[in-house]
Amino acid sequence: EVQLVQSGAEVKKPGESLKISCKGSGYSFTNYWIGWVRQMPGKGLEWMGIIYPGDSDTRYSPSFQGQVTISADKSISTAYLQWSSLKASDTAMYYCARHTVASDAFDVWGQGTMVTVSS
Amino acid sequence: DIVMTQSPDSLAVSLGERATINCKSSQSVLSSSNNKNYLAWYQQKPGQPPKLLILWASTRESGVPDRFSGSGSGTDFTLTISSLQAEDVAVYYCQQYYTTPYTFGQGTKLEIK
Image (cartoon, rainbow over all chains, first blue to last red; front, side, top):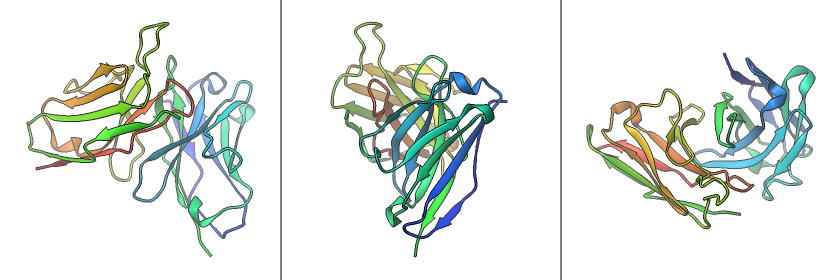
């Protein structure tokens, strides 16, 4: 079964760092782009960026460039999203998702990681 | 960035009736090289991640019921549910994947009347 399994919910304070993960299984991890999508409480979906684990080619939305870092470790089929200094406005659900084999739509989604940033 | 605008923001339809959701892009997402529209539709139920319904504007993803259909080209697109079922209550999003950032519409909340 093709699946993406994300790390668990996090509660952090402003200014702290964080790295959340997304582990792929059931398919060739290095051959599919993985993306990250933010969903703030009660709001819509925001495309943050994508990475190709095969060569770590990465694209960011201008809205998130410099605010987060997307990375991947193909040896363990895992993609990451990290922050160096969290803000309260980073409080959201974060989803990872995989591109389809022949398009850049997302066909497989992780279950989501809720990140809460509060003092 | 390409701006995706959905209408309406919310919609109430009776069971068995047709539901129509519109999506407009600020620039064309039709590729002249392959004549494909780089447009997807997703369904998100409460507490769940989104689910891909339609890609290439009109191609149903495997396993999606045929009451869901997509149409349109260029900048104007439509998702139609031909006969609304109770399990279709959800928020629906369009997304363009023509050029990064691959932006989403703001979502349309579909409810039962």
